[in-house]
Length: 494
Image (cartoon, rainbow, N blue to C red; front, side, top):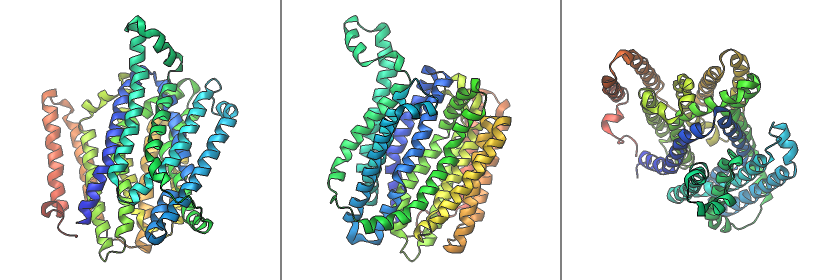
């Protein structure tokens, strides 16, 4: 099968779970931004910033190490999986024990002394999610995207169902439901829990997911090989550093907003920024779906004679897809904005900036394959640390003057810098013939069309939609001239 077609197909399947899950989560944003005030939604945003960081720490690069070592030593696949699973299992349960034991001082340190339960819930979620990451990685390594997607979608369904139950159905039943149901509702629902139900639903979904992944885990040999583990850790630790620094680039701005802005507006600003960040979600979904499919794909294709040309072609199509997403959201912002409550609309101006930032993040992930294939993962750590320094310095400088606008621009500068650094070093160590001029022309064209769309603001409302559709079609036409393979199809590489 044409490898580009296979990659596209697997991206679609992995993306199915991500797209459906994230779109459904995205569709919950209107609920959250109407049920919760900005300050309460700021709590949800902040807590999941910590979750993202802790998941990186607790998986410590072992997913990518599993791909790398399984491909390099196919006769040792079972032993490698078993060693990886046991390693993450031990560290995850030690973490859960630590969080439960020290829940009160941790809650006070995070300025939630009256909500110790948040700490216990999130600590348990993180520990179990980290454990689930390893059987998920095995499904990806074995090219079983449908099993991966079904498991994720089931967990997502449980999560969403419980959120709707606790935040919509139970309040409605409490007010307008039949009286005979009240004793049962009183046993399962307490309005005072509020935001806590978001975390309770997440924990239930995580438990269901682990149950579905249990056959994959139980199939392990349950043998821990210290020699393999040491080699994997040496490979993975730079990825851990890169992941932690990447978290700084992606999420620390929300925490800095809380601690740099005046206390009376901080959580509300975090809530607004977190809600408009969701509007750049379609780009994030595609980038993540692509990563799920591309990482094992790149490793499996690396030995091909024309592998580098294949990787360059993948980059072209990736950038094109991201630019269509960018224009689809920015040109139709008048429709998209209704997915968040009116009290959050003041943040819409930063959405194009965040979309471009995610585009360059995706380009960086594409480029990063060179140091993974050459086992020079320390470069990834150095790049991410450089990005973290940029993120921290720019946020500290810009947040006091521009608030979350400064955070959005800092994110864009950071990811552009990472992509540039990875490209420059990658061309020295693992030269891939990327069509740089084409990529620059495509990005510039999309940005230009976005600015042209701003000139249509004086048109009657009935003309706006067709005018913006015409601009999308214009970009598609430009793309076929810039990227010839769009006219000939996927015939170039087989």
